[in-house]
Length: 531
Image (cartoon, rainbow, N blue to C red; front, side, top):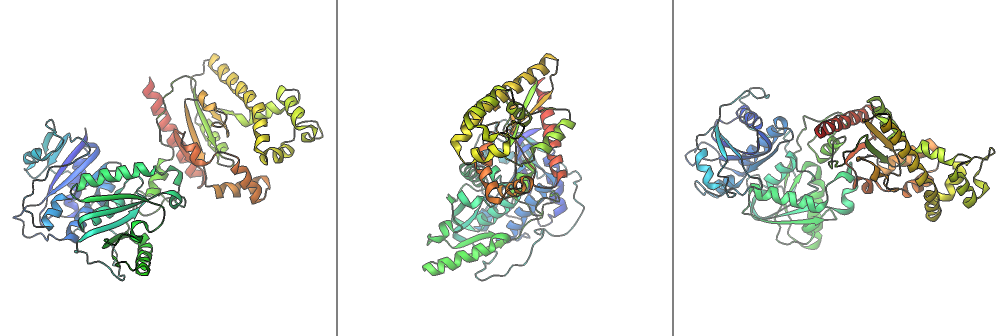
């Protein structure tokens, strides 16, 4: 199976959804990761309507089918030939600027040999395969190519679907490029003659998005976006800029002419024109594209193809591969207060893991008669004791959570003792011949640097607002008190920066259970690969 392939599709007036489904279904069985799709346009095919909208619909249909059939395959429709046809350039022989080395060329058109001369990255070893269609999962249909869920949207300054402009602009988060992004970008490219400006949201603008902590860094999103654009049409001028407000370059660039938006950002597009009017700038034509149904969406995901759904699907999967291989295999599980670590540990224990609760060990460290106990009483005084002369955490809590210096002093007493206790327990397991999985459940795993004793780190997160509500209800605290406790800990983003795998318990328990099952499956595959 090839990692990267190029699929050649011959455009003709008879092409249909079922036709495309069969071609793409055949191709995805032979390509593992990256699939370039080049639609060859014959100048002799006078029956096909060579218009911006018809090419746009065709690209959208290919992406829609690829997202259904191709799963995680990164499909990219090359748009250079489309644009040449719109500019009446006949039989263009533009070289292919592909970021990934093409290993396999697939074609049913009989013209695959000619494409080898166009490969910029000199894929002399690329093999060529002529193929016949196999049955796809899509039903037979003779319906014309149409965008799924297409709606007629009418707004002021709406662009003609077939108009082209010198300067086009669009914006978005563009986290982990998916079919919806590619459709939006293709619509902009096909309507652009010279310069395409793309604003990439950054800063506080991403904080309202679901699982925003998992969003890729802006620099990486901009790089991946540039790679995609150069793959599908390298001859345009691209200006890719980070934006920290809803307007970006549209607030000041006088040369912009067309704004491409999705249905959900249409209102923002209309506000752009309102601002430009106030500033005396040229009003932009607006081209809206409809949202696309996600047939893979579960009940807790969005119905549309979206980055947030993709981020949800990352839960339970490795975001950073582990490297340590010692046994027993220790997973450090951490997360903020009320992030669901206890329920996750219970499920991991049912799956066969040995769970060590550092909170339980902490209680042992606090017990009367221990070294820690005496150090705390000597430093904080006897006012932290209950009627049985044991340390009362409810009395100690307000002292340390309101003063960082006091909290640091407490940690310097307790953390070394907890570490000694869990290291003793792990060594005992090893001495008893246990070589399975140990889960070290520790809220302060990273703060105490206990991750150094772990093979990998799993982080459980929930939105801070959800955490405040859970803490307030569970511990009978005010929202202010709960917020202060959260503020004394690492943020979700700080934890995720050091995580191998992420879980989130903000949905129903069965959703968390599914994430844990996925994580356990991925862990077992990793452990099997070590042998």
